Length: 279
Ligand code: ZN
Image (cartoon, rainbow, N blue to C red):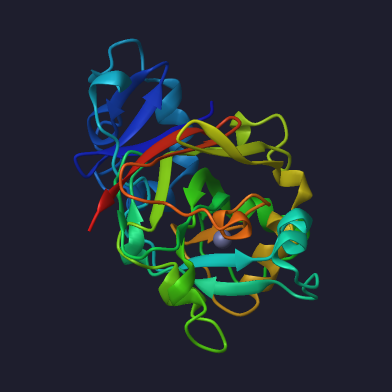
């Protein structure tokens, strides 16, 4: 039975059929209210999801979802990982993954406001991989086994900050507070017909800006897990923002400003709607 793990008021919840179920209450104490503990024991979430019944604690439409992975140890970002985005950036395809850090303090939820910290704040819709186990030196053939689920993310980036130094400040420019919306939920892999081929898109103020499929990733999910786990021991809740396709604002010189609405969607995962607000 697939699961969708989210959070409401800092408590882990499962989402099923537009209903929200408190995880601690519906697991007879097998799980605590901490989403991080749930991710580390994600195999058991399938059983809880199976027994949820038809009496949710609330309706999805009546709650505000928080950050589904609130305290990851590590959040990796991957640059230049779609051919279309490499072309629009005028760069050469990288020979090994281009990796940077988004500091966990940048995370916000699927309805969180994006606080505009600079005049060249840009959108980047991305598939986000959520690790579900302690993982070291994982071969590509076993890599999906290290994944708890997938979610959607926005790798919001302040381009002036990014290119203020040489080499560029990827880490800082992508780690302003609120520049990492994720959600709406961590969706288990058995939810997808093919977890390696999902449509993703980004609309700003109702205008389609980005549209691609994750099968176009240059370094796919197994390749990224193999590469990163050969360097760092991955931990449950660690995340990989896998890169963005073409259509970012920098290409056309259009950037986010207070009042804008960013809608990010991934097939089988759902939609985030984030409003831009003044600092
Ligand atoms: Zn990115």
